[in-house]
Length: 396
Image (cartoon, rainbow, N blue to C red):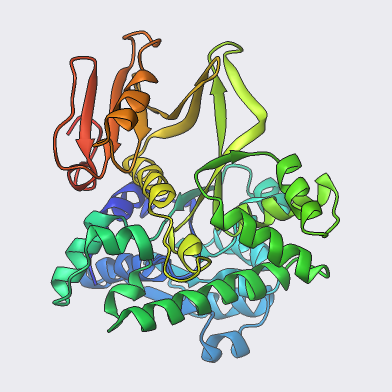
């Protein structure tokens, strides 16, 4: 397994801090591996480590609640040497937040993971009041895929990435049938086990239809109203409040990311409309039929995921009736980024480049496509997808 230094380097300054280190992200994106890699660093340095994976029956049966967890950890403490404690999928422990609040007062450094952003909401956030720091982990970006595939003697092309995404496990699987089965099983686990059971959703058909519509509509602008209208057209009635509630569940489980529009006219974010991107494009792919993959929207989704990985704050840029896919900001630098599958056709080329014409030169303008030919002009830089996927920023 590759060392995911992109994330570990963000966490490393806090290794010995009394802040609780919270590692969050969608199921099977590699949180447990990162936790294990950090623990291994401590072991290699001769430090005492306690690693508990609550998905293991050994621990889930023996440590069912906060009191049992605190007792178990305290048995391992030393008066002289700090203990490094790693709690994987800690939300499976009843009142885990109370246990964490208690444990951080001991002579230890505490790391926890979980698959739901409720880890950072409600009572837990209020009680900790600044005593934690969180780090979000995502499925592999393409640079990581190439490194891992090379490590295990596999090949995973950009075309594969556009279709099947970046969940680490799929790189190991022998064929596309196995990959598809794994992704369908993962989808079932996340949607049914993690979301429907957690929130006790009774309108199961409504929820499943909404999820399918949202995940197959990635990289498109729509509102809660448009989702409601779609469901109504399918003879499934629901309220706007229900739509918004269900969308929030998908966000909390890291299934989608909602990206707001940024209006230059109002100089503010528009709250009623947003683009939704899938955390991994495989959520779109497994909902397609007869192998007709949605490469155009998946490409835009992948560019979004990669920009977030690079550390950019991303929004949708609008000016009048014009829309640029992304306004990407990092520090003092701002970029306008347009994404198209191909601009080899003259009409497509003219349309995509025309979007930049009315915009001033205060922001760098970039267009990313799957074309290998360089279509750059003096005001607009063209970056091929193959080049973009190995860049560490929009400058290099």
